[in-house]
Image (cartoon, rainbow, N blue to C red; front, side, top):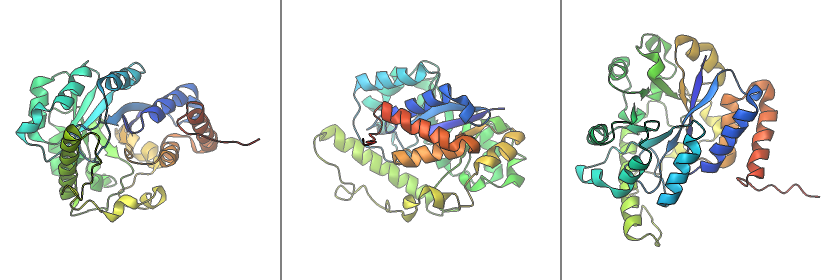
Length: 315
């Protein structure tokens, strides 16, 4: 039995994910059966190929190398969210993205794709990478998903509108290749989801181009015209609201329904989430309920010891 979790934030939650990996290693008794870290996903900003969530910031080559080594030496692959659907052929030569791909090109790390032109480029230029088909493709029918699972992908991320439709899930081929986004905050059956992903891609392109030219000047997506339709009200849902959505997957169901059917890949959303949101989400999904308080305390204590958070206990 394996429950393979893909965790958010290569850079945005870099230190926290390393701390969590250490807690999981030292205190496995606090966690549910078979829990393991399948990957940490995200990007090194300001990568123009990034999609799903606009990722801000700047990373130099030294940090990129250090981050790759820090996760890989712990047996954790990095999985790059190169899922920008707005890419054009001219973006394939982006220096930073190709530097990242070259530095992590050890046969262990992975990449998530949605753009056919980028997928083709990566397959030809960096054939050592395991490739994941993104949920951004919006394959929201059983037939489309089954066809995607038959293709040459390491993993296919299921459209989360299909998450709890077991009449469809039971019939899928290659169930071990399916990955479920367990805690999406998006509106179920949202008619604007594909367009929102495209708009995020445009915003990432705008941000990346801006930082290349003006790294010391603040970027405002509204001022620069890259912020169209980004004020989605559902981004503000809290972790408790998300659990009420029809697309949400409960942790008990992972072990009682999904794993017995042959599914083992689960993705936690949260690249732009706050630290305490992540702590609560990780504990909710991966800790044994009877050890949740101890696991939470231990994780917070490790975070404080490693200066991920600062806690003043008083005298």
